[in-house]
Length: 301
Image (cartoon, helix red, strand yellow):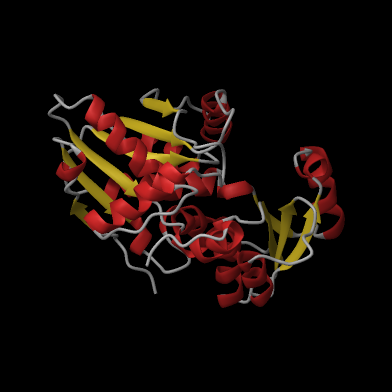
């Protein structure tokens, strides 16, 4: 069902003016829906659930979250009752991801943004209504999720100097950073606007979960969010199309498109570097049809 370990391929970016040796870790090929870091972060969480006496799973996510899409599918395949707390008011017309969650027999409960972000409110809501359900936080950014992302480094068959990934909830960048060795560096492309303090959140979360400090080998890049989460510009859309034409690799406007845009921009600015670089393609492509409908655009012909 899953293509693991995912392929590691040479990525020729010379037509973009990049001189360094670049590879791409194709986690987008793990599964058509449960791809990339979604499977990495959910795998150990599902194992933990199955090895304990929980009755179901409850999680959180935005209306366009590929996390809730992937989780609902896994739960449906394994006949696990699933409740999803969705950020924001219930729309008059459900988007494709929410429709897929319902088709996967998930229960959707919409919370206003204030309640959604109130940890005490959410905990009370869950303990009252689903007392024996296993809770997975946004993006599965918990102990099990980070442990799953640590396995990515173990699959790499080459020595490298830098690895690039997107940063949302922070589990992936924490998993990579805590598994790197020596002078290997992680570049985290932050897709959120106004998240300058996200490094403190990720470091504190890691320390609380693992009782040790996170390796300080991360450089967060905040200048490539293109307006914020799920936002884009014409420049980004044109880049996504050109990148596909040149490499044959599809990316999305929420995460991976911004990642590869940042990767190329950073490497061009450091063109004299002889370092070996890896880009982690974390999937998210299953959300493209809904994104295209939302913004009335077509990414690929």
